[in-house]
Length: 150
Image (cartoon, rainbow, N blue to C red; front, side, top):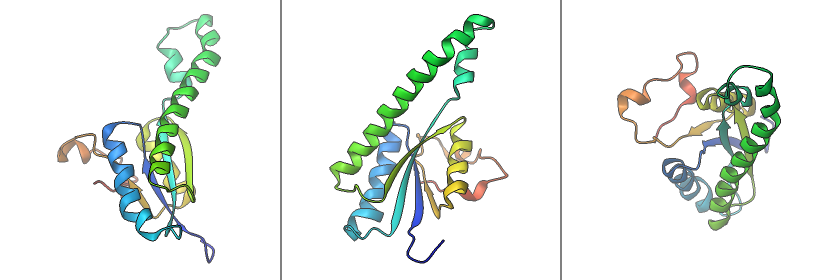
């Protein structure tokens, strides 16, 4: 990281009540108290299913390929709606600078870890989705350091 560059904080966001709480918690504790001189660059990541996976549900055959552009468009629109929600939450708390929205593709665990690696994030914040401690421990063993639970 070059001098003067802010560290990156990744927040996993899927629009659920738990991810909304995680984003608001992050904004309230790490952004708002510092005013416009935020200590972090905030990266909000939504992970969506790969298009090919969704089309495979439609069944085999050449007809499935015809659905690819339609499914891709619908999935992108859904991702845009989720990230618009995250943007509105940030705007409602007057946090607009140093906020980046990104869509990852594939399994959310993998997409979030990829975002952490790609942006050299210092912190990853996730909502719990109400899972108990046993479920939360089910993380990929190759990247356990990229999970921080609230």
